[in-house]
Image (cartoon, rainbow, N blue to C red; front, top):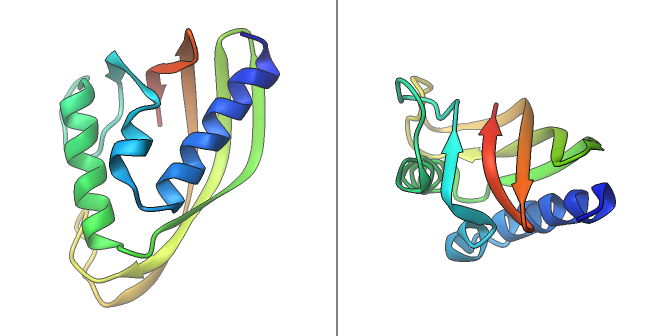
Length: 121
């Protein structure tokens, strides 16, 4: 796939997250995905670890919205600087609930055959 196609895959993944349809978002991941940086986990995790984290995140921030700021692609990798906003209703990652959040993040995605195969965040 071209770098532009890879960027489009990642943007569609963010759109699925913003629709709050986890299964649609998870469909963008390769079954053998490796994430090197899921909060709360020591070491790399696969699809089950990613699903558990995002289920917890969406449960704690039910109106979560992801806004890409910058997207850069080269070869099979896409780097995105993005902001997550919403209302945190429950504790997550040591932060108490009951507050508006605005988190900035930078993530590197490696794609294989149109699916996210590896993530660093």
